[in-house]
Amino acid sequence: MKGQSLTPTLRTRFTAVKAVFMDVDGVLTDGSAIFIKGESPKVWHVRDRLGIKALISRGVKVFWISGRPSQELEERARELGVHGAYHGVSDKFTLMKSLLSEAGLGSSEALYIGDDLVDLRCMEYAGVGCAPSDAVREVMDSADFVSDFPGGRGAVRQVAEVLLESLGLWEGVVEEYRTAGELRPRRK
Image 1 (cartoon, rainbow, N blue to C red):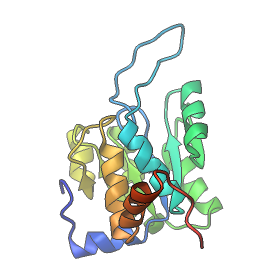
Image 2: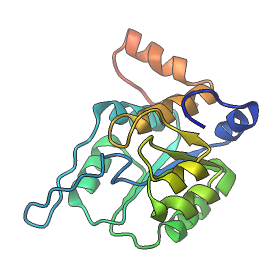
Image 3: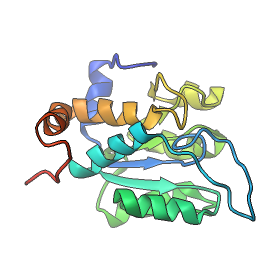
Image 4: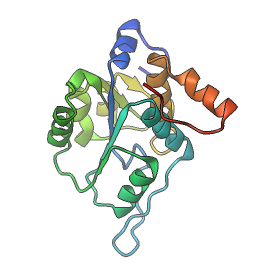
C-alpha cells in the first residue's frame, strides 16, 4: 500500500499502536555513509524530527534500533526525547520483543519502520509494518504501508502523521503550532 489511503482494517490496526520502532540508516537517514575517523556522520531530515516529537508529545513511545554503532545517534535521540536508542544491535527482533514486554505491550501495539532485509522479521511481527518508498522490494512487499517519501527524506514524518491521524490526534498537533508554535506533552 502506498500513500495515505488506508483500508478500514489497516486504519484499525494503526489505532492500536502505542510504540513505534524504527531502523536508522535508510529510514531516519538516506542510508548513505561517509566515514570520518571511525564515525559515520548522519544527515537527519527536519520534518522527520517534528513527526517524532509529535508522536512523543502524544504519548507514543519511540525506539530506534540500528545495527551500526553510532554516538551521534544517542545524542540525537536524547535531543528529541526518544524513549530508547539502541545501536550496534545484531538481533533487532529479540530487542524489540524485549522492549515490548518491558512496556507491557503486545505485538499488535507496535509499528515498525524498516527498509532492508534485516528489518523484515520486526516488520512482520509488529501490528503495522511500514517502509520508506526506496526500501528494498521484499520489504515493500511485506509492508502494510509504504510512504510516498524515501528514507531520510520525510518517510518517518508521513508515517507519524498517518498514525496520529488514525488516533485522532494530528489536528491537535497542527493547532498547537498555529497557536503556540511548539508541542507540549498532552495532558491525561
